[in-house]
Image (cartoon, rainbow, N blue to C red):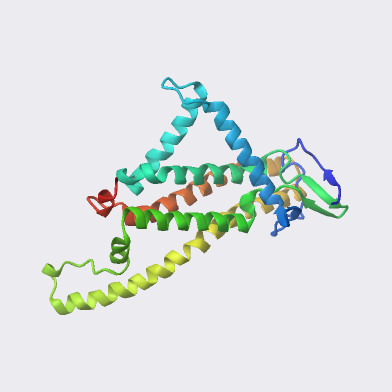
Length: 281
């Protein structure tokens, strides 16, 4: 393996950014058991370890009278829970919140990782062909596709487990019109309309894998390229301002991904007095 070349381990990525931009394809660094490990995977492992360590340090063993660190984590989790509860419903929030909270925290920190010292500035290779040793995981389409797939699997599980297959089929294809207010021929015609709309909805559900992944990838990857381009034009000051903007974009994109995942679940499971309450046990 070619030796690593450290451009600046202690400098933020936007300080030494260049007009070359970010390679759209993640770079394989090494292999473990024949499985390649890319620079985005390495970043994921590093930040995941830091998240685990930070939570253990802040919370430790949870106490009835929380420490400052435990209170900080609990307040952040409580705020996110309060924002998501009206969407997924009171009966579902306890079941889905660990998954949704995991999405938010993971994606937020991965989005912000491009602004951390060393990310995007640690290079390896040969002069004129430097490659990023570590890069933001969410600037790699493989990562965002994996997150979308996990969101889709979670949606499938929660809907089938707490709403049921019959509720899902009725929600997609069922005739929601009231027979008492319509003539029978009109009700039959509406049934065909609802059936067609259900087919469109099935296509829409399948495309969530693409929409969720490309929205997140496009914003993070575009932001990384913007900072690199500005770094080549006017180093330090302008990229630093763009970096502050990326803090806001990273937060919004993490919340949007989490919010949409919650909305998809809530659309089926959040019915007052619905089938989900029967499965609450």
